[in-house]
Length: 371
Image (cartoon, rainbow, N blue to C red; front, top):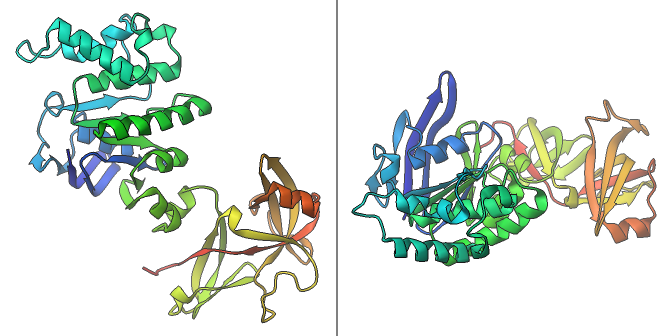
């Protein structure tokens, strides 16, 4: 079932939780609402569910306005972060609950309920736990049971609010893969809230980046990663280094280095900043002429290696900029992070305290006031 969100706004006292949000969610799509705490993603999910009322705007399910439809009539399944299972009920009874409380005219027979619950527990690969109680399950098992319970009433829309937030990293990763496989099998229109970038990019068909109650960008995981629409999106998705400077007629001067920026050819000594991912920094030892381009202009900056963390195939280098061979400014706030293959780190035999030169291979430049 498709969902249309039209100009939805919501305030709690003086706090603007949502500001004129509009979105289209396609039938059978798995969409992630991603953003920092307080950005409005959970409020939007609750408004879609009917658990919260918008101050303005409308929600349409399959083209029909459901803005004033009661939560019990929206055919929505909801999975919360903390499972919300009934502790006094067995796994079987938890999953059967939504079927048993249906109006008598719509309630399946006991045999149908038994078969339905058995099928759902098989779907989430936990049919062998039917007689156990929530306290006897692991966190990952509880969340899968919570999902089975939400699916029992055959919702047309499945909403998940930080579904894996209470679990440890290894279990989260396993459940992310499992949720993606389950969705590919069921094709229920699904929306899940998360503040975990990796989770959203790995699981969702499309990602909605939210900030301050507004939608910053909507796109596939690859689109939002490769082409961030705003400084917020670039900074929120993954590790990034931020450099400040000025842009003038297609050139950007940033903290001692120069970059070509033809997309800002019209800039006239405008304030600019560039985002560079750690793996997009070229690292070499300092030597006379290092960090200069073919025309002899500075394209890199001198740094000191203060710490190296080698884990698996990647070496993470923590660097501080140098001016006249001395740390520039408050060096703890000026940390630059670079990532190079662990083998390259080993081959270069780098040592903490050494002077290096880092040069951006790729940078995304934003100019203040530019569209």
